[in-house]
Image (cartoon, rainbow, N blue to C red; front, side):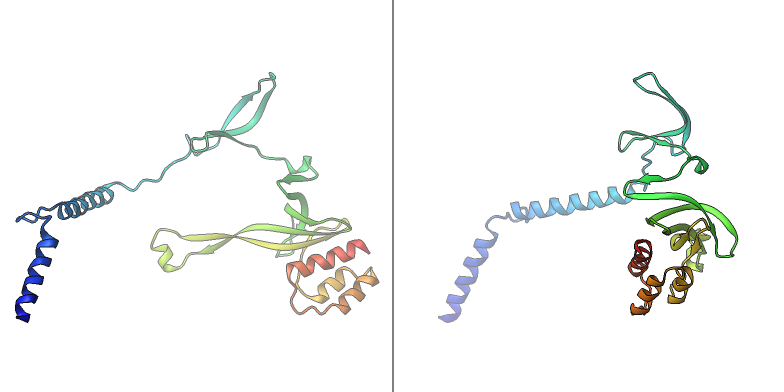
Length: 224
């Protein structure tokens, strides 16, 4: 009797589950699943067969010379332009003559053009971001650091890679800027003319010369 009951329950469950299908397995749920699989297959085929292209946002990536005619009839010459299709803007580029300027403000950053001693102790000139003002200037010099690529990078066609490095410089009075050495002795030699600063350096427990600590030292020098 127990076997008969179990058999009846099994048959009823089978009928309830598969009543929505016909004999060929073409029920609505099955059809939907089959359509999804088919569409996914077609979509994947389309994506895989599509060429990989690099979108160019510019009408011409190169900067070209041009003339700007303003609505007030003034004319701007000596600049280069290009059209950015993505942002729908005309971009302008010009080269600033550093001998004609004292300071350039770009956003919240201020840049000055100064003489400095490079790593080979050769007198050079270039742009610096000014971090602090006063008798002693704290500056940031940014340069491109070229490095040879590793073997596996060269395998992809890149012979050398590059990165941007930042170096802190200090400029005192009319002397060229020099690269900061992150030691207590360096600042004592630069700021020897103010005893208050030397006392300040003695009292400060400086184990690591971080950028913020250097800013504090320069600020203290300029305020005393």
